Length: 537
Image (cartoon, rainbow, N blue to C red):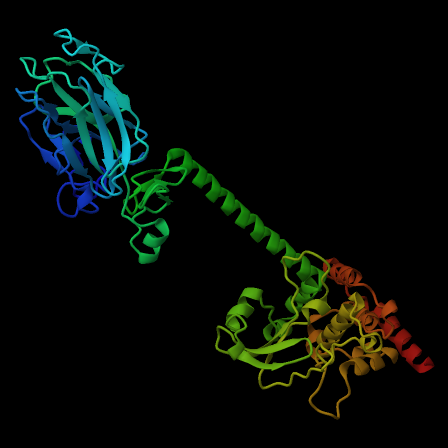
């Protein structure tokens, strides 16, 4: 895969980036290639040193090429010519020691390699002939022993001297004019068809070779720190452990060009896996959402939310003055309980200034909320009795925690909240709804709601309790039942209070029961009975 708008092929050779033809199409000068028409069937892809490129592999980071090799011959007087050749490859390219071998063809010669940097001997071999005048026409079809030798390379080579000299004193003069050649070649090469006596002529030969290449001359970490790492997205960077530079490889499940910004693309199997993962993630999120909603409904029901909701909807007047808010609405109103919205701190939580969508300003108390992900025992006292009140109103709190007026008197004796504390607080709510009075009053002359309510119930005067709005909307039997339930909830002895489930059951039964108003005669008997009890008391 070449860069966009760059030549992708030369003949039948694909040109992948970082290689390229023309400015802007290659990574740097080391990877510049040329496409030349040499009057052959197909144009040739070559490096600037005239090596002909056969194949470029990104996965293996190698280039298969054919390189010209010189032939060295004795002159007519049998004198040994100068046979030392110095070769310097680009720093990012090297002759692969695992994919190539060093070969020498000729009679009685020693060919070897010297590292240009250290000047140390690297590798070499000797090619011998049994007869100084071998049979004319003898052909070397394999590099075994006679007239040919080969050896491996100990390491990748980038800069070297290739040398060859005679190791015998045979007379080289005469008509045969023997020649020799030494070269690097692909280790799989086996096309030895040279006539070692007279047909190695002083011309150029092409031999297949394999070059290794790397990106740059720094490590992955250094390239990353400098901001010039060329690896694609969804690819890994791999350091060259035998020298400088690095390579890039697409991660597992991806394929493509490792060196283009978006060159590594998901394979079909990886794409399927990603779709499956995405589906699983969506399913997980949906299940988590359902789980949270179930937990919310569970807590809402457990803490009397359904009962409170039913009571609110049962009275138009109450519904106009009361609203239940969701967590999302509360978070939005308080800007996620922003510290800049704090108005003060009470015993069971911090009070925040909230702004409702209609522009009204309210105070919201954030109690010690139990994490809804922690599915366990949670009571109203854990959540606090959450209410919104106008800033112009009074909201009294006490240091020990909780809203004054809803606090269980048993707490002051034991110092502990229980499930029966919830029941007491809910009883206060019922008393508020029945009487239309607040749990606490800003006027010091007014007695508390609980004391007022319990006194009237003790005097068997429930009809003096209820608010006019309640009387208009409700039935007498329903009002009596709710008043007695509130009285039980407000009992000073916590053990004699009903549990919250019983409270909910009673209210639910009242809601479901199609109550029929008593006949005037029956109602008169009830009133006389209540009046008689009051006189008796």
